[in-house]
Length: 438
Image (cartoon, rainbow, N blue to C red; front, side, top):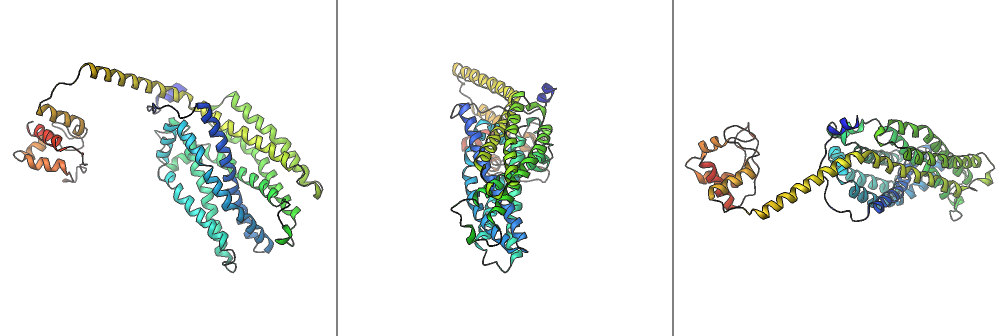
């Protein structure tokens, strides 16, 4: 079955260039840098969602508007770190999986390119929201709308990334996927996206619990009705709920992934990560149901356990990618090796048999074959008109043919416009003489 699928899969040649670092080093760099990057992406997305939620709730309970302001203060910092830390994984994955990454970029097209303006707009909106809190204090509808639009963009950008990275895993789909919308319909896209959203909320809940629990944070200067315990308990509860939900969505993500990337090593890695998360959830539950003074007592244990879980999950992501692409990479390596062998053979033959001096007619034919034959034939229409039509039009007018080749355009509606060929003056003269002698 796999062999049949691979026979229908595009097998391009790889770039025969050495890696700048050992493969294992690049893999470690990819996994570690991606985990750091996604941590701040989670905080950026989760923080913007909670800011919007708190500000809407603040319409009835004013102190939640203050809470929204305090969370919003962290978004611009976290998004900047997310961008900076995104450079390393982007370069690493492009180096390790050049052909796959480029192919996915090309197939998702304008949506992939749109990430740049979308990120720019989202960042400007968060700054506008952050610094217009007092100015728009009497126009909360507009102020909330600014954050609402930023949240929508923040939610859409990771979806584009996910679709693109997901598509590179399935070369067998490259012949059937013609754009972002079709790539979006692959069965594992939305389960993985929901997994990401839950991770964003869980991570942000843990961050808020720490942020408002700091001794250096002067809580009473900002809040009179809401208590530190109340906010931290809500944050802890969010982490607990989102993490517990991962135990439901996680199996769905695995079941919707094509089996070609599955291995016992992968299942063991992911399973270990899930097992490590269980005591973390137990400790969170114990704290949110226990006495107020015990809240946060095990914070760093919980954080360490969840970070370990995330590390296993990130490693599992790479294991799946490596196993899924291995058969295709072997075929691509074989094709590349064969191509290099043919190039070496042709080079050796060319050195042993240097080209003979060609006549003007031979030179014109050589130019025609290399530059013109893709669109023109002797007597039949290919893309452009056949040679016999050119002869009929320009017989006795070699300068007219010369000028047309030099600066081509569009003459007839049933033919596409001829592109400029970039020929030298000598090449134009040679090919024009060749055509008119036919």
